[in-house]
Image 1: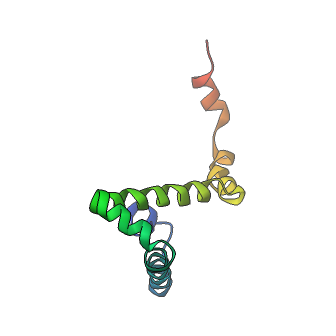
Image 2: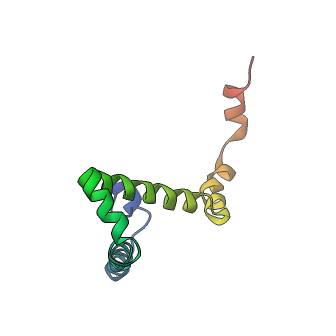
Image 3: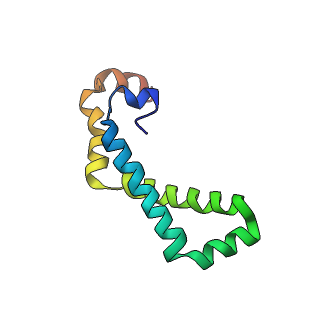
Length: 97
């Protein structure tokens, strides 16, 4: 995510950190496909081909992101901007008249 220009402005991991994360993901996916779920992966490929694999990993990514954003510390960090809101100005616009 830090490779995105908007995120890169606030998060710049060291190249070694990025490579370590990429290595971890590569090892994890190899284990999932080759050791934990080889018969399931073959079945997906036989029925749906590459599209089935893409769908499966999209679902895995969604679950991982959901887990990330429902973490209490992450939720608190995301909501940290609220202390900088000018609530009086916003209420003037958002309150019914």
